[in-house]
Length: 562
Image (cartoon, rainbow, N blue to C red; front, side, top):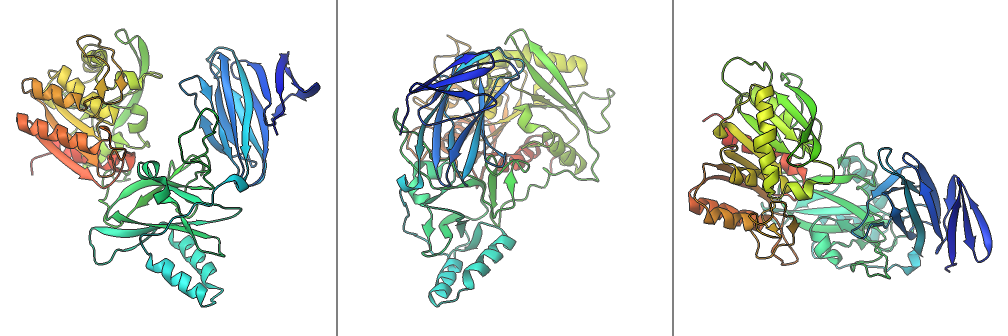
């Protein structure tokens, strides 16, 4: 039941008025459905709110920043952070809590220390119990031999079969991988979930497939057991990320009056020991599936016998872009200012391509140089200015000008770096691959080699670059603007490495996606006479594959001749 409530602030205490009653709220305010609390918050402060939930219950809230900017995070009864929440296009943050166990869940509202004071309103909008959730299941089109054998044993009255199954998969890890008929192209992959409380359904969250057709990724339930499972036929050698979500409440996109609970309960697979980030909680991590036959990533791991290069970070201010960003410089082992200048690799999304990150570029360079697959080279890892990635990386002319007239001249003044385009490589993934391509297209005298990892070539500008050099990405119109530009321009002195994943498809039949636009761009370049090295991997739009294909691209474009 909803109770009309509103709150007013007075010094450090909040007075919540509910139908004439006054509720005092200090360090942690207990929220009730329909309650609204309005508060001022100072930089560095944290306000805590409690929501009491039963197992398998959901709750949705709204946090509206009326002035300034606030951040939100949710925690389970043990104090483990579930996830952080960002504001939507309307400036509102809409946290959704999914209770795995009964207890008090906590919402925290904060303001960064370097931000301004803010005023916000928080409301507990709605709660949903497990009885309101649909008992969704689907028929299994594929049959796991291992699951069939277990069901047969249970049907024969073998009471120990189920516990033995859980012991075995706990020791071996999941998902379960089995042969598919006589095929050497596909394997049967079975995801399993052990229910620990009321469970009406379980969804395998695997982008983009479960998003486009969620009912095909709902698990089946073995009656009278705690076992839920889903078996799919998947290409051999696949690498991908997934999560498991029990008690999914709603599949349809949200309406103004219907909270959206899908994904709120998703966690890393408890029986899969491999997850990323490795040190994240089960709520914020994703599980890694790596099927037999996946190509090894021989150069992405640190090796004790390999000399390491040196990295240093600088804060770089751009007068063209009028912002600041982190720049990390890698110099190879035995770096010297004598001799020929070093080739340079420019990489975007510095925080994801630094040492120990998702694509550890310095480590990859150390290993490739030590194995004599490439010669010594420098790297310039370009960070993103705060909140500007989506505006700068997708073919922004001003960003390309920043690279040519500000950043790289500074690099050449400060380090023994080449000025030759033929010895300069630009690399990145997604929008970063697009940025590398457009930097070379706009300034071929700066960049002569492009390593594009799952480049976002379906991107379309809002207006032409000639009319507005700051255009921003929008949904694809005719698609493949960059391919059209290369088709219409004279051939440039640029060499390309392109890669894309077989799972990077647009299942909604639009003109987006990654795979098909990359194939189209490859064909356009080949028709124009460009040197193109192209690879498709069995994976999705994530760093599991890019940490391998970066090395492949460097070997193809900068490697020694065989």
